[in-house]
Amino acid sequence: MRYGVVAITLGYVVSAVLLASCSDSSSGKQEGVFAYWDNNEEEDALLPDGELKQLVPPWDPNGQMCIFRDGSGRFATPYDPTLPSQHNPGGLKPYHDPPIGLDVWDQHGNFTGQTIFVPGPYALPGSTIGGDIPPDATGNFNNDGTYTGCAFDSAGRLFAADLGSAQGSSASPDQGRIVEWFPPDYQSYCIIDGPTEGGVGPHHVDGTGGLRNPGIFATDESDNLYVPESGNGRVLRYAATALPRSVADCGPDGLLSPPAARVPFITGTGGVPGGIARDPTCDCWAVSNILGSPAVGFFDNDGQPTAVKGSIPAGPYNPFGVAVTPGGDLFFVDISLSCDANGCNTVDYGGGVFRVTFQGGVPSAPQRIIGGLDFPTSVTVCDSSQQLCPEPPAGAAPPDTGPAPGGGGSQG
Image (cartoon, rainbow, N blue to C red; front, side, top):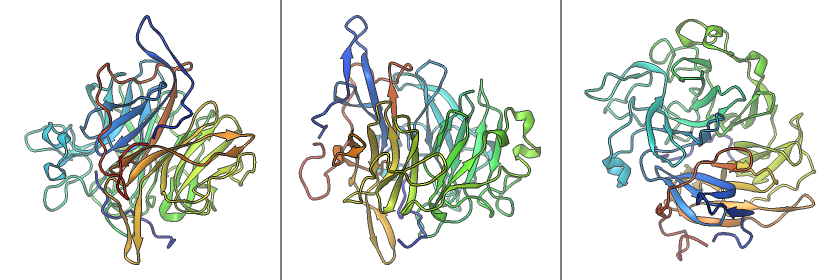
């Protein structure tokens, strides 16, 4: 997936302080907090000892990484085809079936062979596994749908957001949808919100009446779902009581009818919200702004700004995905934009990952963990004291990075 222009309509070094860790000499596994992000079709990791490694070498991960809650260390990442024209090693590997969905990887970043998707008639040439997202007029599957945000609830149900065709344009069409898949096999699904008219097929793919650019989202301890909608400058809350508990709660054609209610949770983030994450240390929410100020703000459970933790001021970065560790440290991804009167373009190799620590609720200056990333969107954290965390195999390569803006090295 590549965005030529981020769809926005509102006009608007490894740190010296490493994550607390220790090494289990009997297994070679690390203990502590891991952080992960997508980067030009690969999934990278910051290990508890401060090492930077590839968890999944280039082969389609793009969008939010979601870790299964079954203790297996497996994780899912959205995907669509990596084209040979992208000059990426992933473009030389076989496409996943169907063309658009979420891949399932094992704890060490090996593809399990399982994909999660909405079935339909649109398949790769020679394949019998089809999805409901069609190719464009040239046969390219990258432009008419792609998943970005995802989250599991406590029962293992998986939610993901399809942007529709909101890629490479300066407008945010109302084509976004939220899809829910059910354990244990994640083959049954329900489209809980999305287009209701026009488009293609019974699901109205790329029709009208859906969300405008849903972003990187989260669930809470009660299984309510929180979805930033950057095209409308707000964060939505879907009540757990309104979400299907099983496929039997869905309607005909896999559509929840009527769609789950879009309840505004935060309507004034100070900019264009891209991601949301729960902060367990303040019983509050961190919300990133791709454009605007603050770069990251904090909100209480009523969706109101809170001063329990200080916000992160706007700076030379464009935060998209955001994550918070159990200890309250904040990570955010800089998607890196260059904006003019015609819109905002991503900067090749301009992206990065930043970390912010807090003392008494006062944030440190954001510390760049890594730069030179190509279109990163999300960041995920995992504490090995709470669950089995994905971990790169021994000898994994470092992340692929290009020249950071302004010259110099890509890390540091």
